[in-house]
Image 1: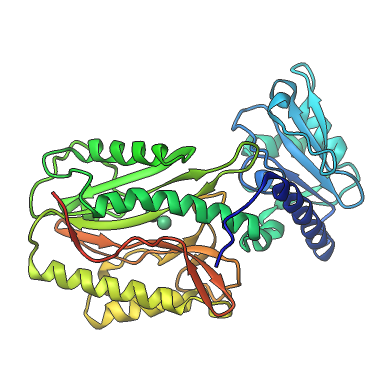
Image 2 (image 1 turned 180 degrees about the horizontal axis):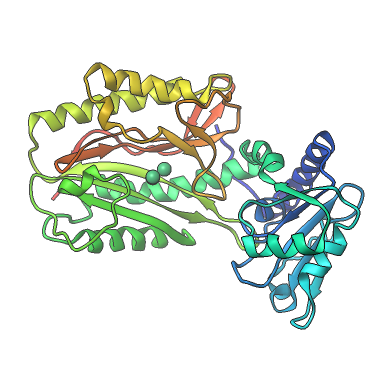
Length: 379
Ligand code: ZN
Ligand code: ZN
Ligand code: ZN
């Protein structure tokens, strides 16, 4: 079982241990420095998430020195100081931040820069530095994809709060018939916020023929009787001073009786998803989990309608490593957190998806979402 209790003090300890592991990876890979700007690497390491401004924020990490956070002076008050972790170098509006970062990596040959850094920032740095820049994810992805105790507790908390909303849907507390997808989507979002999530990342409501479009943008369509509705939503949970961790769940409901073919399709999907969840444990390949569901769906001739991968890792980002997809022979590791979300979509007719988040363990997995998966009729 995942220990759900986590204190802010444990966060500080977790950051220190993540930095230690990161420095170890840099040594192994002969990486002279890391420049962490936008994206999840920085909050993973420090709890601080840079705003996606044009002004440069970057944590510069060199192997033998204390890391330095180069941050716009006006953003400095938002930075929680972690004296043991990094020092702060605020820069004023009239200074050249690229010069400061280029100086901080002076003499370095191989410099990892976080993948989500603005291209404009990297281009400006390349003008001022002789270093060869490569994606920091080469160093960070294997570390970030294995969630430590603190991160597991955060993901579990995010999932638990999201489950409350999914359960309300399955229990018929959310009205569907006669309302637009947009209205329902907004209600789901409000409910997520009421459960204490910091923000709503997405709230997909695809009704009738729209249920066959996996990432449908909820619109003006009014939900009628006898339709399938795919509801896929998630948000972010965080404590003050911590990075936010994401939730992501999908449930499909119906408004009244459906054709036999849909009922059959749904039960195939449900079995496929539970077979996939049962496959999860450390040491299996990512693609074998995909195959466990896809091959079952194929037995019934629906494989051509399962048009996306089975799942994605989840953490500070909604989608991150590892990806549960054909061709990914990477082995699942204990502590990997990812979605298991097969779907079957018959174009212009109807579709269904079931999605849960799991955390892999040595001999199985911890299921973070625990809302029923039976086909529920709602009104
Ligand atoms: Zn998706
Ligand atoms: Zn989802
Ligand atoms: Zn997902």
